[in-house]
Length: 224
Length: 224
DNA sequence: CGAGACTTTGACAGATTTCAACACGGGTGG
DNA sequence: CCACCCGTGTTGAAATCTGTCAAAGTCTCG
Image (cartoon, rainbow over all chains, first blue to last red):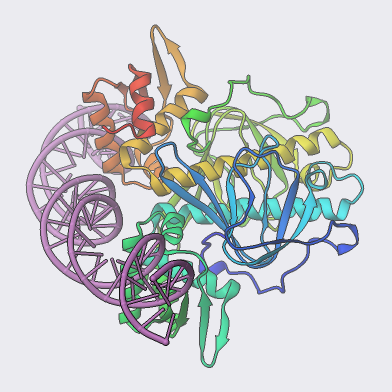
């Protein structure tokens, strides 16, 4: 998951499997805190998230960290570059995954449908990452946090009466490292959204969106 | 071109054509200021840059701009998402391009070698963009500008006696919009590098790197 | 040569980070 | 069962970096 412009949120599809399960290996499961792979590992499998949330991170020599992406249901993770993984990947919740052999992406032999589906997933990834550049490079802290909540709401939010409830399985510092902020700024921004009655913070890891249109406005930078 | 960690600069290859010219359409040429495609255009061709520099940009509704990437010799641009271009692409210099039909990427029929080469280019793109996230999200202005110069030096620098000369065909605001800064900050940072004798500014569009190791240190955040 | 765009520089403002203290909450062990 | 503890999150104050606004300088192109 990347932070893409809310305006181009695509129609919500049910999590579309890349291919019928006939051809695939059996489902993989992970417990919270378990790593799926590490940076530098040889890529043998790609994975489509069936349920749960993954966190993809990359480290700088001096310890600075960037959360590259969160893997939400429907996302595909593990694209190789030069045959290797270029991020660490950890489960934040119980996660179910559908593995696909790397070979299905890199040489379509055997299953052209699956090959195409994986390729299209890679191309979607490129486009989504381009959106995310815009966010990292040009948005304010408030816009970033609001955008983040909007995307999460779209992707994994649940209706709760008139409102929408979003679970945040990641820590504040995960969010900060994803958005290019500090934990303090993320915390302050959430507080501010709460005080504006745009969201309510039900528990540390549960946010209720009370005024989605206001949140969307903030995400798009319509001033205050 | 993205700003990738200097430490993982790969061995310098001569600009490798993706495939022998036998199969391809003839070379395309662009003049400075000419657009190769616009956001929203249907993708018919991908292009590998043979010589010159392209600029890929995306606009936010309120006019804020992000330069997504610069297309340097060897780079491949124009990857489709849902069949469409997701950036504008303009030539900054005289540019020569090798076009490849989109179909060669999306269904390898006809030329499996080329299909694989384009796919690998897309996968490299994903990895390089992940590096760029780190840069946008976690680096200071000085680190960004220094990293930018390092990568340009690697990719398109020329030896000039003991030093290395880098042409900057893009404007300061292009650099700013690429790095997530303002033109003023880019300008100030370059001035500061000049005053530290790390670079010399030969002309607005030509920088001479006098102390590459110092520049690399700055890029990696070794304090000062 | 002149006009306009781009770049540089300066002063100032403001957003975000930094540093520090405190609050909260879940888990453990007594 | 309760108290304690430690990691995580929140809040505050000060510092700093970068952005903003304004003006002067420079280059390019007609």
